[in-house]
Image (tube, rainbow, N blue to C red; front, top):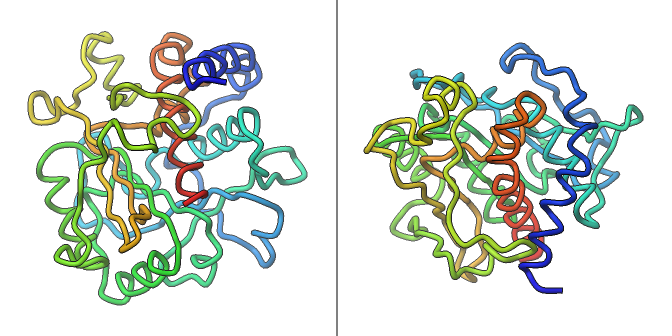
Length: 274
C-alpha cells in the first residue's frame, strides 16, 4: 500500500472514530497531579512517559511540564492503538497507561520514549543532565514540543547542551526527505499547529503564536554516532494540542488532527524501529 493510500486511511479512521474520543469530558490541563509509575508498570506494552522538570520562568500560554498533560497522552496512545499494530499498554479501565517521570526516577530507564512540552522554560541541574544523557545514550528517545520564539529556543538549546554537548552532538534540521516523514503516513510539509486558545483568539486566521518570530515551524534532532535520533524537537508548533484538544472542538479537530497524529505516529514508529 502506498503512503498516500495510508494517509487517506488515517483521515478515514480518525473520522470514523472521532465520536468516542469526542464523547470524553475534557478537564483543563494543569489540574491533575503527576501520575508516577508503580512497580511493574512497563511490563504490558508501549507506555507514554512525560518528563517532569523544573521551570525558572513562564512563557505566554505555557504552564511548564504539565502543558498538555494528561489528555495529550491519553488521546495519542488511544489513536496509536487504533491505527497501528503497536502493543499499547492499557489499564483495566481501558485507558492507555501513562506516567510522569523525573530525571532521578529509576522508571526513567524503563521508558521507551519521553515527551516534554513548554521546554523553553526548563532548567536542568548537572545531576539531571547526567541522568538524561545516560538514558539517551543507552537507547532512549526524548521528544520536546510546544515552544515558540527565539528566547525559548535559546534557553532550550543551552539546557539540552548540558545533556548532550553540541560539539559532539549537534542539533540539525530534519529535512522533509528524511524517512521519518513517511514512516507510515506521508507528510509533505512540517505542520504548524497552534494551541486551541490562540486559534480561537485569532479567529482561526493564523497559527504563528509569536508573529513573524515563529512563522516557520521546525523539526530538529540530535542524533547519535550511528544516526539514530535521540532527541526530536518540534519547534514553533504545538503537535500535542492536536492530540489533547481533539475532544473539544470539531473544527479544530478537522483542521489539525490529521497532521498532528500523522507526525506523532511517524515519529514514534521511527524512533521505536531505529
